[in-house]
Length: 121
Image 1 (tube, rainbow, N blue to C red):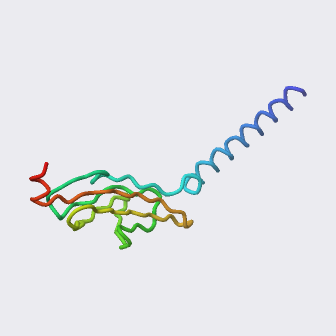
Image 2: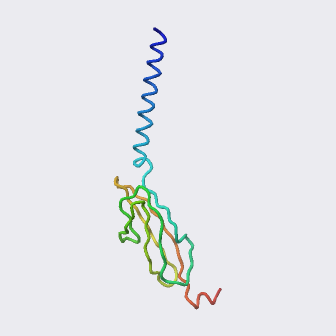
């Protein structure tokens, strides 16, 4: 009889652990929140070409914006946009929101070098 009660308790404990484990797995989107992985360009980027390609991946994101303008995502969460830089110092902001209203933000500082700036170096 004692062995039977012990096996019942072990079975109940294993069941509770499985249910809690599945709950954590199912709620990981809520727990972790959105994430933006920027591929190019990296912060501190300097170029002589005014048109650059901004690309990366957004995880657990429903809406993504680049400098306030909505950007499209493919089914895997990848994004790619062209950005025209102003002469000199530029700041680019990518912000993503998940379905719960939480946000992730990446800011990149870039410099567009002109021919006179390049000659100084």
